[in-house]
Each structure stands twice: as structure tokens, then as C-alpha cells.
Length: 332
Ligand code: NDP
Image (cartoon, rainbow, N blue to C red):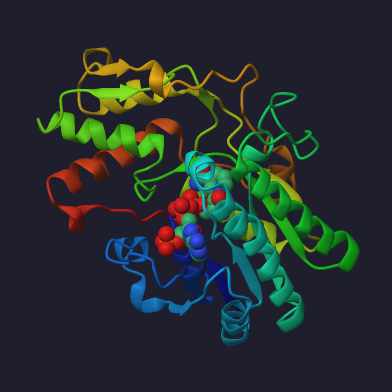
């Protein structure tokens, strides 16, 4: 039975990855921070809390990370923990650097000292492209991050590349494009939309105020993307891979689909406020997943319409306080 250590196990991807690895008969160990609010934990949502071992670790404290790696004795390390919000990274750039960038450096040092034979997956981000030079983006597209989050992810990315190229470690990066699910935290725009749709449908809210609806994104499903992470780890040779659907949609399409799920027209409820505006990217942020597809056979199985429907359905049940009826499970 292989051992997997997942940092950020309480996040959206951590929970879906745990579910996938347990099905594949891994022993799953995850790091959690002591300050975390585990009451509405994603692991509980997927009913996995009794099947994993959780170890407290602080990404500012190397000793706690060393203890976690020693206890887990991992064959595979999936490094997902990060300060993950672009907006928050502008409010708290130093914390973002400490956790998302230097936190990775600390984990890498511990990994190389304690269990250098373990394989390592780094959750890199399409935000590293920032001001995008070409579309769609591939593994060869130049990076130009435009936020403290993107810059922190890029710092972490180059450390992992260095581990692979200089130290011959099995270290890979997945350059993840946006991916969603009913477990997406509510500070992200997609959950803001689906939560509002559920509340409007139940008469608890009258309108939804949005920024620029013409922003374009490549949105995938979290369950599909954690499957890609696992495939990357099983490759004989480590490498970097874009994890994306290759399809671009506007935020307006997302909003329209969400309101349609409950039989409403978004134009009757959505108001745009220039205060929330960020300019539409001149070049679309959309990934080309061909390298991943050709090397591993991976392809996304859940399309945007299905993702939106799952999220709206789950948020309606949350509003009705029927959380126990939400089916978060994704089939492998
Ligand atoms: P989430 O925001 O859902 O989860 C983030 C995880 O990191 C949580 O377990 C959280 O713990 C943990 N974390 C946050 N801050 C700290 C901290 N200071 N110390 C220790 N742990 C912390 O992210 P996702 O699951 O969606 O993303 C997984 C990874 O993929 C992340 O690295 C993210 O940056 C990256 N990524 C995600 C994309 C997406 O669209 N989802 C796109 C591109 C990259 P807690 O539960 O305690 O808050």
C-alpha cells in the first residue's frame, strides 16, 4: 500500500485527491494547520474524515514539516497547501510569499533531507502566465505573473524544476487552470455566483453584483484535475504539464448557465459595478493540455454545463440546510 502525503488536504483539491487515492488503496496522510476551521471541512463533506491521518504542520516552521514527512513516510507528496486567492495576495503579499513561495521551499528542504526518494507534485498555477504572451498557453509559454500569488507560485515552480534538473528528483509541476466544484471555497467568483443563484431562487437575495462579465477563463472540474495529478506522478520521468480543458468561456456564460439551472434569466438579477471591474485580458487565459493527454491518456470528463449544475444544486441544498443530501462524489 503506497503512502501519500497531501498538504492542503482540507482544500477543494485535497478532498477530491484523497477520495481518488483511497479508491486506489493508498494510505493517505494530510497536513492541517492548527488555526484551520475544520467544522465545514471538505473531508467531512466527502465522508472521508475517518479514513485519513491528519498531522498538524505550520508552513512557517520547518520542524513541524519535518515531523509530518517523517510520520507520513510518503512515497508520493502532493503539495497543494497555499494561500490560494489572487485578491487576498494583494491584501497580504507577505503572507502569500511566506506560505505559497517560501512554504514550498521549506517543504522541499525537508523532503530532500528526510525522504528524497519520494515523488513530488507541485500545484502550479495558470496565474504564473499573468500577462499572457500567446493563447492557448502551453508548457513553453513564457511566464509573466501579475499578482503576488502568481509570483509566489512561480518561485515555487522554479524550485521544483531545479530539484528535477539539478538533483534528478522525481519532481513534477501541474500548471493548473481554474477548476471548480461544489467544494470550491465561497470567496471564489464561481461560488459567489452559484451561492447567489441559490439564494435568489429561495427569495433570500434580490440581486447579484458582479465585475467584468467578459473576463474569459478555462474552467475544469476539480475531480478531473486531481486525476491528472495522479497520472503525472505515475510517469516514469518527472515533467511539467498544463492541466486544462482547452476550452474558453466568459464569466457571462457561467452566470447565464447558473441562472438557467433554476429557470431564471440572469439579466433580471445581475448588476455590474465598475468598482469590481478588472479589465478583460487582451489574450485569453486558456490552456493546451495536449502534452498531458498524449503522455497519460488523461482527458476531462465533466464539462462546464455539468460543473455549474452540480454547484448550483449543492448550493440550493445548502440554503435549504439539506447538506446531507449533497452528492459530492466523483467517479474515477
Ligand atoms: P483551496 O483554497 O481550496 O485549499 C487550499 C489549502 O491550502 C487548504 O487546505 C488550506 O487549509 C491550505 N492553506 C491555506 N493557507 C495555509 C497556510 N497559511 N498554511 C497551511 N495551509 C494553508 O485550494 P484548491 O484546493 O482549489 O487548490 C489546490 C492547489 O492548487 C493550491 O495550491 C492552489 O493554489 C492550486 N491551484 C488551484 C486552482 C483552482 O482553480 N482551484 C488553479 C491553479 C492552482 P485550510 O483548510 O486550513 O484553509
